[in-house]
Length: 97
Image (tube, rainbow, N blue to C red; front, side, top):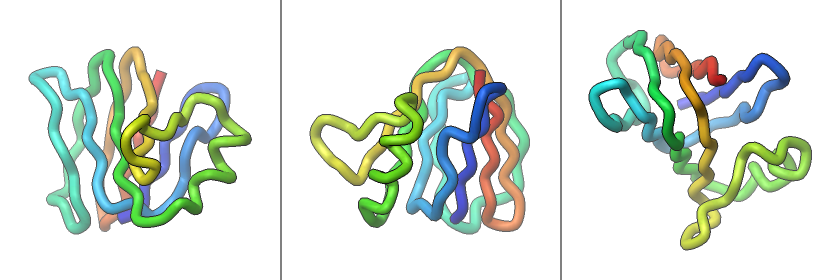
């Protein structure tokens, strides 16, 4: 699936990923490829991005908000205060604050 994380200041991440775990208002939930279309509100927490390659490393140098996980360099984390997600046609857009 394709993931795009956008903040008011910049696009924080934009790439193909394997899965994404987000902090929903009723707890964390995970989305995989071909997930049912969904629109949801996010609460404060950490987004975990599971990538299938290390192509994200160039992006990390541009935006310090995306951090590789300490135990697995194919997992990235982004801390957010709140946000909204939309999953449609295998594309996940996260508007994060």
